[in-house]
Structure formats: structure tokens, C-alpha cells
Length: 354
Image 1 (cartoon, one colour):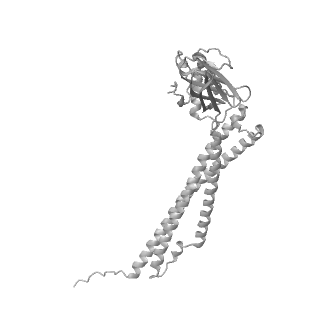
Image 2 (spheres, rainbow, N blue to C red; image 1 turned 45 degrees about the vertical axis):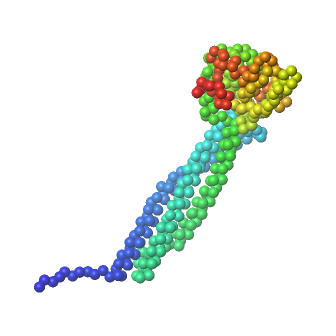
Image 3 (tube, rainbow, N blue to C red; image 1 turned 60 degrees about the vertical axis):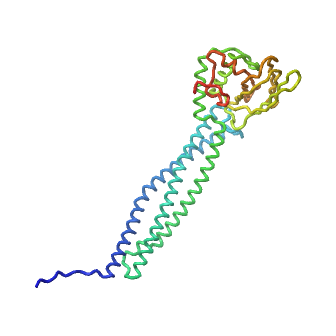
């Protein structure tokens, strides 16, 4: 008779021990993965922090210099000194870069906080399963890898510090956003700069028509020249920028045979460097155009019909304001009129930029 090979039986105790071993292995893998990911994330975060601190120091230097060369309350972007405006533009570029770096830093910190929370939940689940398994078997010597009070306290402190850093960085971002919004009300956008440069290029091919600075009503060729002069001033570094979130109100009153036939208030559209423009429809008769305390007179023949006109206003920092009025039809009747790219869309005049 052949003897049957001896069959090993698996006892409940050995099954429970294997289950505990698997739980310990999972815990070790979770901790090892977290430790492996931490150095790369921490390195990237440190690099972003160093870059932010470097840009902040550079921005502080810009601010100190601006305080010395531009001590007044006027925004440096509006300074008549081109060197001050150049510094202001440089400060804006630094703030934009600071915002980019700080946003990346905040995102990474928030990701680390979420990762830490996920890790805690995973460890808590493992701990509950482990403790349930220990109720029916003896603990193993490696059980302490799951629950280390000192490590848990250190991790909790790190999460509090990270949350505080996120809050401080958000406050920093808010201040940069506010400063950039203030500058954006004065400085032209890259698109507007490109439009100005295109308009200047177009104006150089025009035949200029002489007119007087105090001449109010312009014919078509004079209007084309006046628009070309605005194009030239918009790229002149000696002329300061102006705020574009406020616009002067233009009061227009027209009388025909001593009878008021039209009255309206219109906001002039700012186009930069203290230049404003608007399209209006004027009736025949004597029209008075008022902006603050300044007034100009325009006369249209009584037999003429209502026409669309463009009003341009230039209010230099020093000197008398300059206002011109011309009919849209007169401008478009000129051969190769200057229709600059910076013209507002609401004027309905097709520009060469599209």
C-alpha cells in the first residue's frame, strides 16, 4: 500500500497572519510611494518659491526707484517723464510674471494638501483593517509602521503651515491683481500698441494738408491729416498716457433760427494719451459743443440735412485743448483717407487693420 503524501492544512491563525502581513505590505507601499513623490514636488515648490522671492526683490527695487524719481501721487504710467513711464511698464511686466509664478506655487501647494488628505484617509482605512485583524491574532513586530504619533503630529503641523502659505499667497495675488487692474486703465494693451504702430506706418504715406490747431470745422483732407497727427502722437514717447476708465462729457446744443432743435450729452471715447473721439449726428444750424468750461462753435447751412460727424478732442497736460469736427462723408470722399487701426469700432469706419 502506497502512503499518501502529507497534505498541509491551513489554520485560521495562519490565514489571519497572512491577512495582517498583506495589510502591512500595503501600508509600506503607500508610505514608500508618498515618500518617493514628496522630494520632486518639494523641489519644484522650492524652485517656485525662490523665483517668487527673487521677482519680489526685483519689484521692490523698481518701486524704490519710482518713489525717488516720481514722488507725486499721480500714477507713474501717466508721468510726462518717459524714463518714469518705462520703469512703470517694467514694474507691470514683473507683476505679471509674479502672478504666473505665484499661481503655480498656490496650485502645487493645494495639490500637496489634497494628496496629504488622501494619504491620511488611506492610512486610516488600513489602520482600521489592521486593528480588526489584530483582534484575532497576535501583533507583529512591524506593526508600528502604521501608527507613529510623532510622524502624525509632524504631518499635521506641515498641513497647517501649507494651508497658511496658501492663504498668504492668495492675499498676495489679490494685491497684484488690483495693481495690474489699475495699470491696465492707463497703459495700452499689446493689441492697441500694434494698432498704433500700424496707423503710424499708414500715416507716413499720406499727403498732409495744413490746418490750424484752433480750426474747429475740417474738410475731408484736413480731417485725414488730423487723424494722422493723432496717430503720430499716440506713439510719441514724450507724450504721457492717460486714464481710459474715465471720459469727458460732451454737451451738444443746436439752434436754428434762435430755436433749440437739438441737445444731448455724449461721452467721448478715450483712445490714449489724452485723445478722445465720438461720432454724432448734427442738425443744420448753430451748434455749440461744450466740454467742461471750454466751448467751440460749428455752423451748418440751414439748407443742409442732418449728417454724421466725428468729434476729436486732444487735452494735453499743458496747453489749450484742441477740438475738431468733420463730416464722415467728407472724410470718406478723400482719395486714400487715413483710417487708423486705433479707431473705435463703434464709429463704423472700416480700418486698414480689418
